[in-house]
Length: 245
Image (cartoon, rainbow, N blue to C red):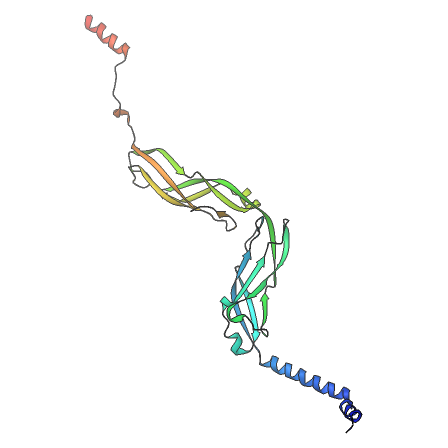
């Protein structure tokens, strides 16, 4: 067979052959897709922080991740192999933004090119505000009553202020912090206790160990009969005059 006849034989009904090959590929793809399975994982949502801007409201701490692939592959993947995160570092101004949820693979998930991954929600609406640091006063909270006949004559807390960090609007509304309750019931001696500072705002971070030391001096209450009675000068003169008469 000459070269010309060979080329003619190959190219004969070329379009039909192409369609046949394409159909075979499509069938193979659909077959493969039909054999794939989907698995759902719940993984922590990591926040890559911005030094100057922070969220002004709390948001979900976990995210739903769907992975699709062959059963033996997706079943070998654990929650630790998938990391979901949102990156705040590129934002420079306060405002509300739709921030995409991104995925990073590790461990058993690495190198699996056929693995399909989707997250829900795919993006989150987050309001960002200037991050600030302030000193805010701390006040102790008490329960119970000092022992009968005693009183607190002197008290102090250390430190008197706590360093707090958070969104500008949150700190603007945080005028003070209070402590866990300090039990005074039946106390009749000087005492010192360490108590935790209460922070009910998850957007505010307290620096340090979040504790204060409360010190109190307790003394018996002085009653009227505890003081010496002195005669007045007028009464003394009157008694002298009466005795002379």
